Length: 157
Ligand SMILES: [Zn+2]
Image (cartoon, rainbow, N blue to C red; front, side, top):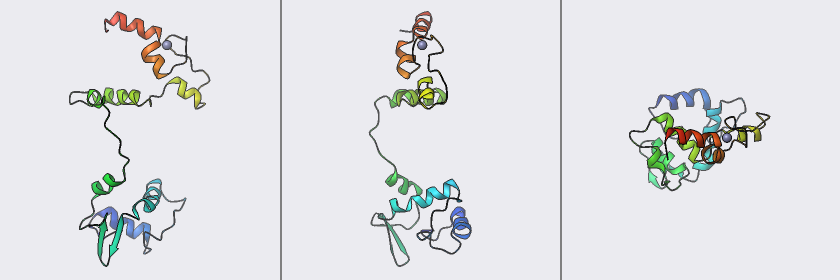
């Protein structure tokens, strides 16, 4: 696509997706797969980073002898500072399932009943454990009477 590559998926995309048309000229088609549309929609984001001089390609002004997905991803992905709590969640001995749920809690992405109610998926957002309040992250972990009693019984402080 961008360069001649030995990668099988590139040869497949050139043969079956591009069908002889330059990838930069292809139109985004609604009948295309989700993945192919995403690839085509990335073109405006990489166009200013990519340059061609004859047969040689340059990425951010540096010669691109061989395509590197890592190099492209590192350039394109949004970067943010590392969170202080990340080591607590993603430790070597952590259980991945618990780490993932903890991460969802920390970034407030846990699907609580209050969110499901806001999205119109359920008709009631009351906490199923206590029934006194809307089931939000803050309620579940800091204010729910049932959870507080459970923590007391478990002896965790
Ligand atoms: Zn509750």
